[in-house]
Length: 342
Image (cartoon, rainbow, N blue to C red):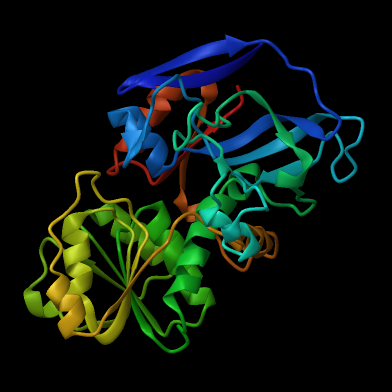
């Protein structure tokens, strides 16, 4: 038997046990290395939904995960027992019009782990042991921790955001939100050659972590004068999922600039000053998951071109998942909380 955690509804997360399963020829059983609690996991825990995705049956969350291989199916060739692996949570169909056009993250038949976007839901990886198809695994032979490997998925979001932002060499970039995704965006735009990176947040701890991962300047947006946030960036990345942060982006982005929305805004919608986009000739683009960027993220971690260790606040045994989720909700004490096997 092994431990899993399931969300049955808002504020109803239960730690349960399940029996082992048989492996198909191309499947791999892993022991949980580390599993990061993401903002979407917290939304499911707090509200029973993420935007339009509503929990309609018990859902095992978790999509930011590393593992250690325990058993392999008869046809598996890329990994062996004992290997550390990064796990890509996206399983695109490869056949629809979006996949054929290279937009795998927009696949019409996407199976994204730990998501209520389809029904029956796609169960995630917050389990002591879990089974995955071999193509979604990347073995990591380098001396890098399982906690760092588990950061490949959130780093891929930052890299995809930088890609959607366009040319960044020599540009000033504003990131609203100094949480995990905001900090991953800081790392990503640095890799892409941004000359200055500014981070806004309303929490001192988040701004301190943003400085550790490479922000040149940090601003308490709730205490800033209007002039401090006006026309200061060529590109703004909204990574807070906050209507107020989106307003900051509209104010801060220079004429002819670009706003990249990464954060999930409230499901009921927001009042949007669209005339500002028109009059200032701003580009407004979205970022949904990560397309090809997961492999880029794995490579950046393997070569230590980025250091995600300042983001990892705590590692908690999966048996204490409820406590881990409560800690992850407290931004005064945590950035990235990870579950680990007991």
